[in-house]
Image 1 (cartoon, rainbow, N blue to C red):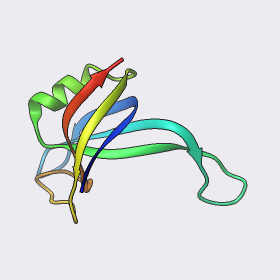
Image 2 (tube, one colour):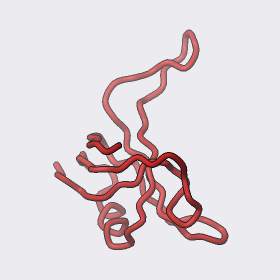
Image 3 (cartoon, rainbow, N blue to C red):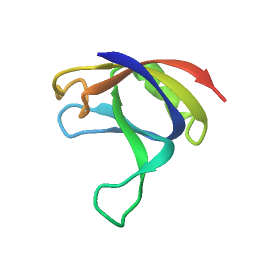
Image 4 (cartoon, one colour):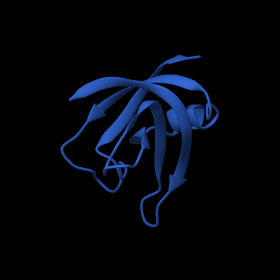
Length: 93
């Protein structure tokens, strides 16, 4: 599948032992509960397989962004840890 997510970009980092990949977290509005009596922020965990896009995202940490992504059935080690791969920055506020 594919879609768009919007929220505050927490961070994008390059990490990995064999395959160096770009991983990030987008904090979305609202809260979720995993167990009764707890609250957590909604997080969108994603990977980026384009170095130029990842560098742009690293400079936008703390900003409100809209990100276009593709969802894959599984993660591949050279593509990233997440099933969600960000393809494009649609807007920055």
